[in-house]
Every structure is written in C-alpha cells, then in structure tokens.
Amino acid sequence: MGWFSKIFKGSGHKVSEGQYDLRHGTDTVGNEPSSSGDAWSEIEDIDRAIALSLSEEDKKREIVIDNDSQLKEDEQLARAIQESLNVESPPRFGNGNIYQPIPFPYSTGFRICARCNAEIGHGRFLNCMGAVWHPECFRCHACNQPISECEFSMSGSYPYHKSCYKEHYHPKCDVCKHFIPTNAAGLIEYRAHPFWAQKYCPFHEHDGTPRCCSCERMEPRDTRYVGLDDGRKLCLECLDSAIMDTNECQPLYLDIQEFYEGLNMKVEQQVPLLLVERQALNEAMDGEKHGHHHMPETRGLCLSEEQTVSTILKRPRIGSGNRAMDMITEPYKLTRRCEVTAILILYGLPRLLTGSILAHEMMHAWLRLRGYRTLSQDVEEGICQVLAHMWLESQIMSMTGSNVASTSSSSAFTSSKCGARSPFDRKLGEFFKHQIESDTSPVYGHGFRAGNMAVLKYGLPRTLDHIRLTGSFPY
Image (cartoon, rainbow, N blue to C red; front, side, top):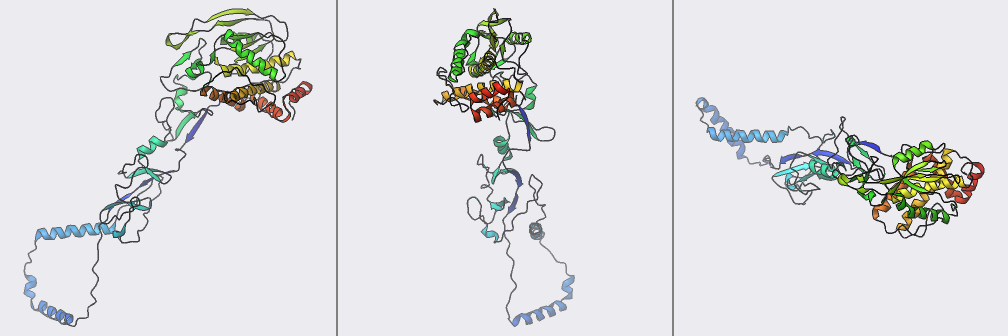
C-alpha cells in the first residue's frame, strides 16, 4: 500500500522560541566632581568646622523631619537601587538556551527601534532578537499584530505569536481537519501517503474511516462514498470513470487490442473479457490449476481452464445510502478452444486502472498463445507489468496531446479513443504508474524493474526474444 508513518519534532522550518526583556528607558545622569580652585573654599571649610565644634548643644537638639518628604525620597532611592542592580534572571528561549542581551554601546537616549528606525528615547522598550524595539513595533509575521506575550515562536528570522505559528506550521489532519496531536513522547506523529502527500491522524486507520479502493485516499469527514456490493468503497472522483459491467468494458478492450497491434503483438484469438465481482474472481482463481496472483487482492485473471463464471450483465444503480443496487449477473460457461479461455477483471474500477489490469492480463494471454515456455514468476509478472506501465504512459501522454506513446518503446501505440479526460484522470494515471514503479514485492516489483530496464536498454522485441530463448531478462 505504500503507507508509512512519520514522527518529527516540528515543521521543517528552523524554529526557536524566545523571550524578551521589557525595560524602562529612564536614564540617570551622575554629577561630575567640581574642579574649581577657589581659595575661599578652604577658609569656608575651616569656619564651618569651628562652628560645628562650638555648637555641641545643637547636636542634642531634636531634629524635626518632614515625614512626607523623607518617604518620597526613600522610595525614589529604593527604585533607583533596584533598577541599577537589575536582579532579574536572564530570560530563556524555548530550547533552554539563555538569552543574553547584546550590550548597548550607546547612551540610552540613542536607542533605535529595529522596525521603524526611530529613536526610542525615554520610555518602555523591548530587548530581544539582538535588537531593541518599541513595544508596538515588535509584531507577528503572520497577523502583523504586536506580540505582547513574554514567549514567542520564530521561523527563520521572523517572530510569531505561538498561536499563529501553530496555525501556519503545525500539520493538520486531511480527514478531520484538526491539528494532528502529539504522542506520549511529545512528538507529532501522523500517517502519510507517498503519492498523494495526504496526512492524517494515526487513529483514523482504526476508527472506520473509509478509504477508496482505487486511489487509496482517505477523504475528509462527511465526504460521500459509494459502497459496492463486495464491501469496497469508491470515492466519487474514481466513480466518475468507473467501468461497471462487461458490455461497458468492450470499447476499452478494443483499445488495448489496438495498443498491442501497434507494438506488433496482435492477439489473433478472440479471448472473452468478463467483468466480475470479487467473489466470482476468487472462485475462478481457486479453480485455476496454475497461475500467479498478486496478493493481497487479485483484480485480474487470465484463465486457461474451462469454468463457469458469473459475469456482470448490467451495471448497478446508485441507490439510497450511496450503495450500488440492482446489479444483474449471469453465468458464462468458458470452453477451452486455445491456451486461454477468458480474461476476468474486477468491476467498479476507474477506466485507467481497469485498462492497466487488462493490459497486464493480455500479456499473459499473448505469452501463452505464442507458446512461451513456463516462466519464473518474476519474469512473467515483470514483463506483464512492463506492458501495463507502457499502456498507462500512452494514455497519460495522449491527455497532454503528445503523439509519443511511451518512453519504453518507440513503436508504442497511442490510443485515440480515450476522449476528453479531467485533470484528476491524469493524476490518477500517474498514481497507478507510481504503484507499479514503487511495488516492493519480489515478483511484481523487482520483476517490473528488471524487465523495464531490459526494455529501455534493448527494446521490447529483443527483450521478448531473449525471454523466449533463455527464460530470463537480458542484462
């Protein structure tokens, strides 16, 4: 499925948290000592000393002090001592580092605000981020409102309110639209899809949130899905091009046959193509004596045995509760006229996915009808995946108006009957290509990469000749 879990401490931005000092810019000016050499000053000092010594009785006199005036002077003195000592503990950033204000080398009357470049002068100011600011000039980079809290977050060199930073950089769940919660270790943990870049809370995998059986996306809450009879869920975008019955699939079957003819690989025999339900596909797979099946779910099968298969004659309608209803099926008896009796495809899949599965199963039929020896699983499934990948490339390129069918083969054929497609169809085709390319299974994934490498290097005809002679890919 390609789903994986991510755990991280924050967003990809370089983030720090800070605090600032809020200080009063009241300046104090000291009195310089006098440098006068006036001779009278010494005589005055002597006279004052004599007068003091002769007035001992005055020392015993009760001194009356104006209480209000003295209290005011004491308060001013205490405030001055407190400000001069600056006993506040140094602020700390969120990462535990102590923030040391940069010494301001100028007189406090020449403080310049880092934002407006105006002189701060006497009054309140902020000292943070290696600069000083008017309180109203220190603003959040997101909302442009002043930051009045003692703590703030940073991304790069820009300050943010902690709430604004979370809104911009904390990941949100694409399903419930809430902030993805942290786990027990305080880390943000979420599930992510490698192609769609979709993030969602881990518990959505177990709370019954449906996932589309085609594109694998989890849609936001309250999004409508269509429930198929076999329990699969199909999103409305995939439903738009879904093929629901055997008759509806025949034009696509003709397109695939023309694609093979464009590769000089025409399938001469008329092989029946049937769209079936999941149960009928599994029963047919059990009745097949040999063959390779892509687990955990098989969506296509090339049969060689005589069987009776239940095929979908008429597509279901979408009834109440967005469920497929009134599907009509009929039994179809397969007779063995050649090495291949039928190709079965799971119903209810988008056109591009149905076509890629059909191109894969057609390659199985072509190999058997051309008398290829019994091949190892990785070689047979690998070359079948190469053809499915080539067909998807041809469809994607035809949507962009390109006449080049495939990068894997210069002789690939572009179908002209795919019609007008939505931008989502192209994205969906890219996703199905991605699924083939990133498959990790030893048979389908490694087999495809080995086969595709051989086709890119030697071309498809020489690769097939080598497989016929040796049963392996050329290197």
